[in-house]
Image (cartoon, rainbow, N blue to C red; front, side, top):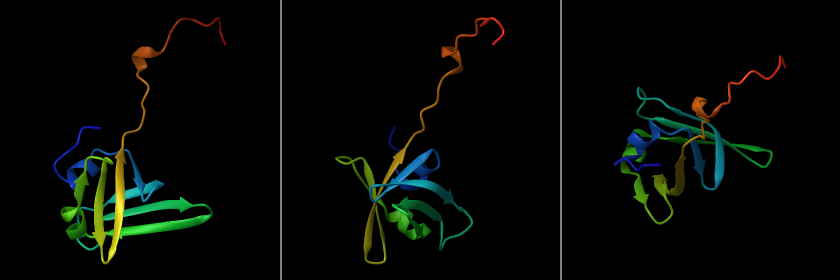
Length: 102
């Protein structure tokens, strides 16, 4: 994934997230809310975990190239966020030959 200058810019083009080593099954950017700009949900075993980050925390996030992660600080906790792209198959790769009526 090409790296943007800010976490907010990166999140706008991100398909999937990993937070603190857990793959998030849901994340949402709420541009109209400063207190809870970024919401993330993930499963840790059978436990549902949720994170909420303010606009200030997202704007202060720093990128660490060595681990390809963004480091966010909310309160006294530090979190590592990895932005991922989904794999998408190209329609050009599909063989459209007639398969005999299957």
